[in-house]
Length: 157
Image (cartoon, rainbow, N blue to C red; front, side, top):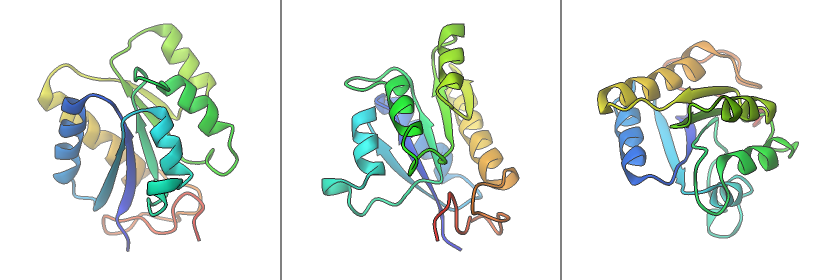
């Protein structure tokens, strides 16, 4: 069984580090790739240029507030692309704005989570996101998760 592939789209170095630490303690084998804005994330998803060997993610964890292309713009472009639209996106952001929540769901985010302020709670939330998406949910083409890994996820053959 291969490790699950997670893409983190986040520009805050501290949040990147916390997410890396939370996922490294996981019971589920995973690989984490990081994009620092929506444009870089799209290049990675489309395997353009230096990103030609990046694996298709099984889950995207997305911040909304980033430079160049923010999470809202990224969601709109990504979810309108038939080749990418089935990849689940978990929004993990500091915004508690009802307008941001509504817009994210209208743009087909799969869930919306407000980042907790404490480091311990942040790690718990990241672990809960991973547990939910890879121990409970069946993703397109995945069948049943087994032994801490996912096979044939998100429509890959």
